[in-house]
Amino acid sequence: MNLKSRDPEIITGDTYGKLSGRYENVSMEYTGRATLLTTDQKPRQLWRHLTGRSEVADQECSVVIEFLSSRRAIAKLYCCDSLIDSVTLKGKVKGSFFLSSRWKIIPFFPIAFGYRKDSFGISLLSRNLMVDCHWDYRLYTPLGAEEGRGESWIFSGSLLRKHQFFSNCLSNGPSRSRS
Image 1 (tube, rainbow, N blue to C red):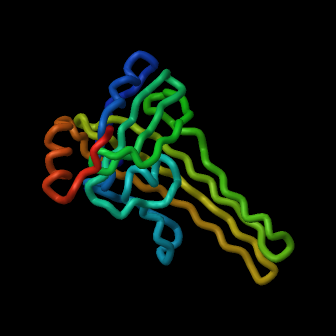
Image 2 (image 1 turned 90 degrees about the horizontal axis):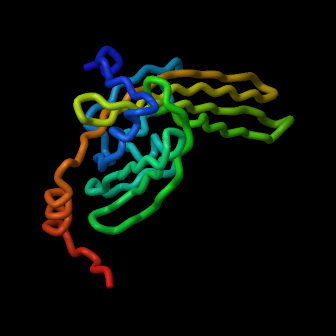
C-alpha cells in the first residue's frame, strides 16, 4: 500500500492544532524507496523520525505531540505512564507541518568527508499521523565517493483512548507510581 497516493488533510496556520495528540510509536504502515538498496533507511518508529534519536525497544511506547504555535511543538515519549524524553520541534506550516532540516556532517578531512540531510513533513490522514521523510547523503574518501537519496512514509495510529493505552501497560507489567 502506498501512503503517498493518499490525500492527507491540508494543514494551515489555523488548523495546525489538529496535529496535537497521542500516537503509537511503532508505525502501523511503512513504505519508501531509496537509491541504495543495501542500506536500511527504515526508522519504523515515530520517535526516531521526529527526533533522530535512537529507537526505543518497548512496543508499548507512545508519542505525544503538543503544539505551542504554528512554528513550535513539543514531542514527548511515554512508555506506559512514564515520561522518557521530550524535545522541542521547530518548523513551519505549509500544507503540512514541515520540521526544520537535520544535517549530520562527517568532518574527517582528508580521510573522509560527507553529510546527510533529512527533511520531514507531518500531516493527518483519517485522524492518524503521516510522516513524510526525504533524505540524501554524500560521502567522499580518497578511494571513491558514495551518494544516495530516498524518501519514506510512515503512518502512526492515533491513540484516542488514553485509558485503554494505560490499561494495556498495566496488564503487561508493573507500573511506577508517582508521588
